[in-house]
Length: 102
Image 1: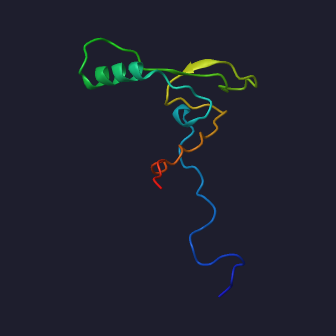
Image 2: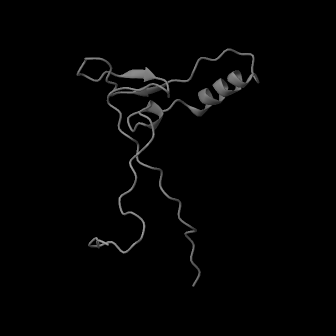
Image 3: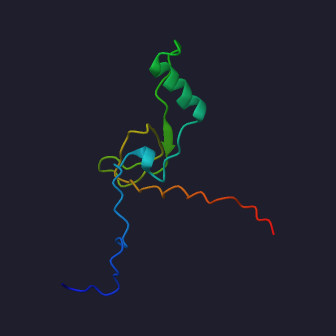
């Protein structure tokens, strides 16, 4: 048995690599469309609304597509993927209550 220095048999210290695909909805540069636009599309897609609604698009100012080295601004859907993907940081962990009685 080989002993590893600094390891006490607990879980691995390194966090697992991000396994999310490189899509705009997971990128830190992407600005999502408004909630109203997303809700209207969901209702249309589910058949709850007869009004036609286009797929909601967000915006990104760092899209890299093809051989162009300069990133232009573009409207992109959540499923779009480009060469300039950077994973968004994980959401903050909610803490318990902030009130203390003494």
